[in-house]
Length: 348
Image (cartoon, rainbow, N blue to C red):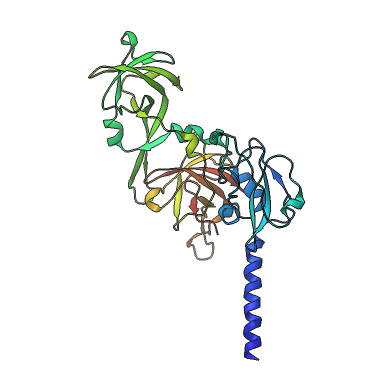
């Protein structure tokens, strides 16, 4: 009897685990999903999963296609059986018959698309400026970076296509620089620890030639006039930084929204926020965080006590740029208006 009971318990646990493995996959998912231009990994993951941050749990790298970890417009995706589990994978381009999936084997495919054409994790047009241009630095980094000493003809302001002159320690391997100006200074909302200073992007400039002390640069892009004393920092390649998987953080995170880009008072879907946690808290790009609206403080009319109401689940965000003590994130869903001071933490 004990043996039969043990076998029954084992079968129950096994069946429960198997159900748990497939429970997160939505019902009525498409048999084949054709990736379209403008799709993101978050969109596709949300199509197949109730918890889109579990993308890596369901994704299977097809070894028979080139760059199997990248997805391109025109790719065909389908759920297949891999070692008894349902996995999503690339089954190729062009006509694909459902019958070809019967035994789970995949046909060889040829990949010719450039890596730059791969779909990003989140909308690239919403975050491009914050990947390549907006950044958080220390005062020491900004104060020690090269700086503009004059414009052509001794002008104190310059625009696109103008020539500027700069001094300082340049990286001889770089010839494209961003032009920055110190912006908002961030402190931790609870400890008042200094977190960083925002380097505001003014434009870009290309090094043309130099002598021992002064470099000549051509201004190639501006969002406002370049001024004397503006700082120069090497520009970064944002395209490579946009390819990542949505995932859970590697550590327990609890931080706050400390700023909203654009100076708006309320936050909604596809707004960019700054949070009070970074690489030292083990945050990484692609990490998905739940947003909780901070509970209000109300007065108990019976006892006159001030009571903190529970926080309310309010949305999700994906971290896309990480600094030591702070990070930028894109709000991918918001069930209610959010504000600075709201809490971000690991999804449940």
